[in-house]
Image (tube, rainbow over all chains, first blue to last red; front, side, top):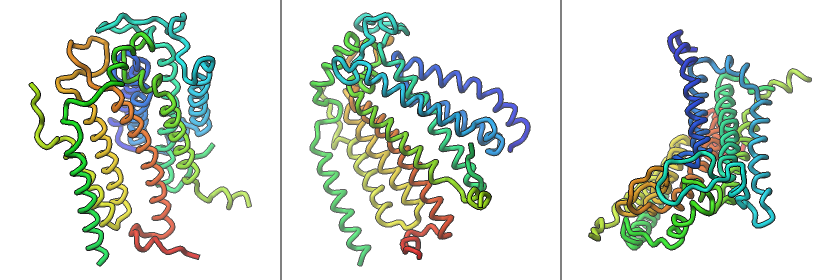
Length: 153
Length: 92
Length: 118
């Protein structure tokens, strides 16, 4: 547990880090970024909270059951999106041309439109959930093991 | 004795790596038939502006499924190994 | 216009980094230094993959507000993304095992922790 100034600043900064990470995840089909990169940004915010407060205090907010459900939901959504276009091939982009995320951008350089991309923004969300839950569980378990306790239900 | 054999093997491996590297295409002018097709047609077929994202999730989606499985397995393995022995003493 | 870089210098730098990483893996006995050598080998391979796909004078392969000109090849960048994530996962598992070895034998020398205890 660090001093009062560090704790107050960390409390204010975690909101901006979360919003920036979610922005990188959601605009993965327009700008550089995507699921893995945005997930790494959010996990670095969680590590900042772990350093500012002690790991015993953080364990009361991030329970293992919540993280496990989040990770399994991300993996399931990714697998279901892969099987949904099985009529043509495995992992077929079946949403191009339809109403959800289905517009086609004009060829060549253009300012981006967020409702394009087909099945890619949904896959970005699923992978982002998976990376956030998995890596923050690993970091929390390592920090708790080094002071002699374990991550509990 | 073991150090000398190790040093000779290391020099042989580095010599092979350097000899192989000097023989690939000149830096900056790669052969690119498949990538020319992907850069031309990625906007109409997948509908996204980011060609790298459409390669990762659409043209090569099976590799990303394998990578997500590896991440899941590694997180499960780490959480399985980092358990202490306190529960057994409390329950018995 | 075809100015070739002499000796393919970026590829040579990746090969020399791999050579340094192999030296660390063969000759050092501290387990933490071994893991650092494996991470250095992973970085050398990622650098080599990204350098393979460079086109002279190219821009990033993204169509949002891109300046005119040729584009860099996108497929090696996708392979590098997968490689980075796999390396992070394997490194986390290796570090957990080193923590366990230290807790059980009290030493992180790789010669002393090789014997099986009864």
